[in-house]
Length: 89
Image (cartoon, rainbow, N blue to C red):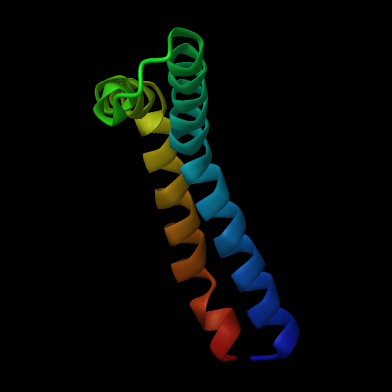
């Protein structure tokens, strides 16, 4: 197994991880920013106010994108296992 193969596998792994985490992180970021903006405009300084909307938003993001995320992860894993003989030979 060459260095180029290892770097290619690592790059593919990081790209899949980025793709899988993006919907959840972006949803949490947008909701957190919106709640923070609302808190600064109304001068409400309650730390637990952002928790419930974030949990609901992340849950909705998982419901909407979960099927795609699962298929992406399964496809990556299948391709990785199918490529094992070529890595060893």
